[in-house]
Image (tube, rainbow, N blue to C red; front, side, top):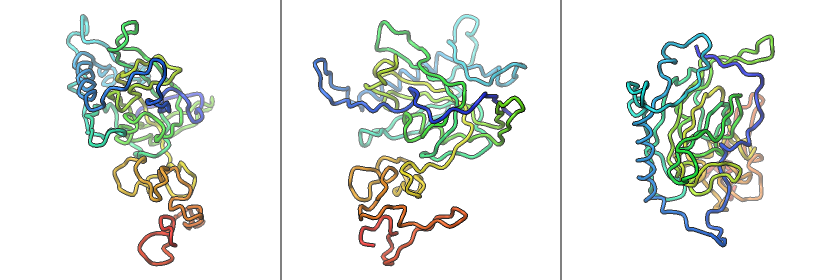
Length: 310
């Protein structure tokens, strides 16, 4: 069993890991149009694959943990004394995920499973408790290093998975949280059986041309997040009583593209999903045990909270 000791759980995180909200299309004196995302995708993949071919992680420590091992993933270059190490490319898996901006564009997203975890698996719009280490891969800025940590939290933080960078959201769903949480006499917390992994994401699933202004992340940087997944709880981002995973009506595991009333506000963030003037929370039923039912008063096959005529 893997354990992690922390002093406290932090509140909802506002660290660099969250999505940037800037507008790429706001012209200024030095405005440069963003590169075509479809043309940038293969460039990004090549950069990531070169990193995977030339770097390794501390797999030997995970295989035979020393007494003081912290179960943190660490990366290093395959060279010199490490010339015989197994490259990450031989240890990662991958899946295809969609770009959130350009229709029809997909990325091959690489990720490393060190420990899948033994607890519950999060859904894509859940609230996840993780610790993490964020690293960029830079081939854009001559004055910045090739690879550098830009953000980290060794203490567990709670993150809204709909608000973090897409590549991390797309990979956390492949892991499981802890099987047990123990409060120790000194006030620290132990997690057991949690997930440990890393994601290697192209810039199109990270910050692309719009990194947070408070960071040192270069534009078009590829990102790496090594993480530990401890807990997850069901997300209801708009507080309307309908779990956000239920509001994924087309079942594609993306929260952004379900908008029943066409008001440009996705259902997961819309407190009146059908725009009939009645809050969604008034059009569902929740019993004393927290079970939710979705009435269809006019019997037309459309539940009330999605039916403007009900």
